[in-house]
Amino acid sequence: MQLFKNLFAKPLFCTLHVTTSSGFHLRPIARFVTLAKTFSSRIDASFEGKSVDAKKVNTLLLLSLEQGDTFTLKIQGKDAKEAKKALQELFDTLMEEEREKTEEISYNTHRYEATMIEGESLFQGVEVAPLWHYQTQTKKRQTSHTFAEALTLTLTQLDVAYKEATSPTQAEIFLAQKSLLETLAEESDSLEAFQAQIEKESYHLEGSTLESKRADYEDLLHQLQRNLGEERTLLLPDSPHILVAKSFLPSEIALIKESPIVGVVLHDTSPYAHSAILLRASGVPSIIAPLHEVTKEEMLLLDSLAGVVVKSPTPKDIASAHKRASLHQQQSQHANDTRFELAQTTQGKTIEVFANIGNIESAKEAKEAGANGVGLLRSEFLFQLHEPSLEKQRLAYQEIFEMFESVTVRTLDVGGDKSLPYLHIPPEENPFLGIRGVRLFRTHPEVLKRQLHAIFLARGTKRIKVMFPMVSTLEEFTQAKAVALKVAKEQKLSLEGVEFGIMIEVPSVLFLLDAFNEVVDFYSIGTNDLSQYLFATERTHPLLKIDPLSFVLFDALRHIMKYATKPVSLCGELAANPNALKPLLEMGIERLSVSPKSIAMLKEEIRHV
Image 1: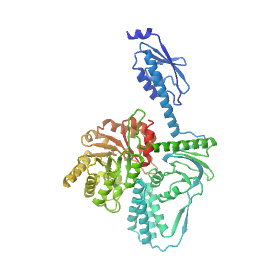
Image 2: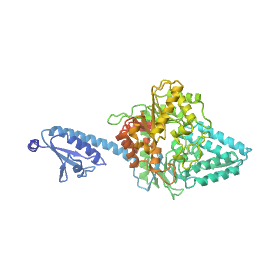
Image 3: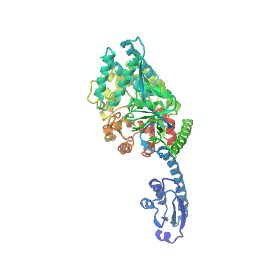
């Protein structure tokens, strides 16, 4: 009967114009069809003599509607008037949303006329300048320092660099270098012996998964040589240039930041090499890209927003770059001005943006950056060359806990490429698959018991979350929690308001979620290590690269979101990747934790999803 009513009702017509460069594609069509199906009227779409059922996604796609096309809806039935009004309004909304998305996409995936070389962005920005090849020179100067005195001075300088670090990652690098220097010095009583030791260690790293760490050995040698009067100087320009280098020493980052260098292009290195990590933290627009065979006279256009380097840009390219740089500056300023406001999507969904921090300084930075709380407190900053006392730990944790309403503190996570001189871990064939994270409960339980005691003392009555890293089995979590409960009982401390959870970093957890759902209070996905273990590829490997947007990783994340019944947050670098934001939110992730520098811009990006 309804069919006859629709057939004999007077049809209504509606003309729709496709106004976005992305056309009328799958996602907006799906939303359009969903609404069309709610009406009983027959709805057809016509374009260039072809008419299709507008209640079917596949048939609407057959029209291949692109920007500038105009098509007609024919609506016939008793609710045709309501359908026409609703579909017209929805289509206009879809075009507006797609226009905004297209502007954002074009902002992040720009096309230039000249030769473009794609790469991996380290810090976003747009710069145009002549290139400057990495070059150094060595000078001799008089010094009265003995080898032992130069060694002590170098250790002191690294300790100062550690204490003045502006990010947790920087602090970890300088601490690691200091620890490495002490270890190397144990077998050296002269510069010659030390240099031989460096050459030996570097040789063993060549071609291994840790090859990118050779720069740290070289850096330590040059810092020691400098304190003995042999000074290696990084030659830098006196006007704006873009530095091109295979890599450079971590200690040279400060010089680059203070120089007229406006951008950096690294080639043949890993984004997880210490030089790259420190460069990202410095705030200098930079990218890793295979830029070879360039001459000193060439102009470069560095667009790390789009992840490209342009050789010999055309005048039109340069004008476009300046426009993009201005837009980026405006967006950054707006993001900073609204950093304390809620991060709500266009659909009104609030996303919590938390901070990854590693010391008190970065906690203050996160507070000023507009963080909703701390999603990852790396506690390693307290564990330097000597194990911290209970009181030192308590005071540090307490200062951070008092700043935020919500703090997730990760228990000590060392092992792999992170070592401490007083935590003796026997040499392992593959340390990344050995004693790491939660497995320290087996080898150094007293250290972790003291840490848990300090955390429980510091919180007072505040609600906090305690997170165990590198958990691979249910037993590892239950045993670690049992230790925590025992510590609290022995010290007569209440655990009311304390939640216990795990970092999902090891793939085995994906197959044990049903069991973990019964015992954990929350999950935090560490995509950095999860990617490493999914692909069996060490993150700093100079040749083997992991695609941060691999569908394999996203399938793993969707699996977690499908089967996890406890709250889930994401604290890996993927959380700050603008190209990952939409799919992450679409799969249901509502809490992201990033470095303090990324908070304001991430909040702003969320408001446009």
